[in-house]
Length: 164
Ligand SMILES: [Cu+2]
Image (cartoon, rainbow, N blue to C red):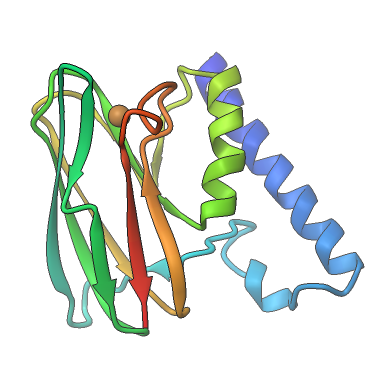
């Protein structure tokens, strides 16, 4: 099960980083309250609370890979249901995180290109598939959604979410 262990390995690394940050007194303990997961962009949403639906299409063509739209504005505290549709010919992913975490994760993905995601903040979609993510944006700031399959980010698969 190389895929599974790759994902676990990444989580352990994230937790070690969290523990180190806590021991240095840099980050409050509450930030790590989600079963050991660190979600920089907020937290998984509550389907019983109101949400706004944002549809995002993933597509690819000769020399291009895109999310449409690739810029979204959200109010702090708002819940968004992302309806993800892969209309391309290749598999794509949608990983919602801080720019820093996506950059670190991208390096992990270069070592383990087969790493697959099915997490509260990230999905991998085969061609012509769709998926949903319900997310609550609890923090103001600029976050990113990205496809970290090697080569895709560089070809344009990144988007910005501004939380005000
Ligand atoms: Cu992609």
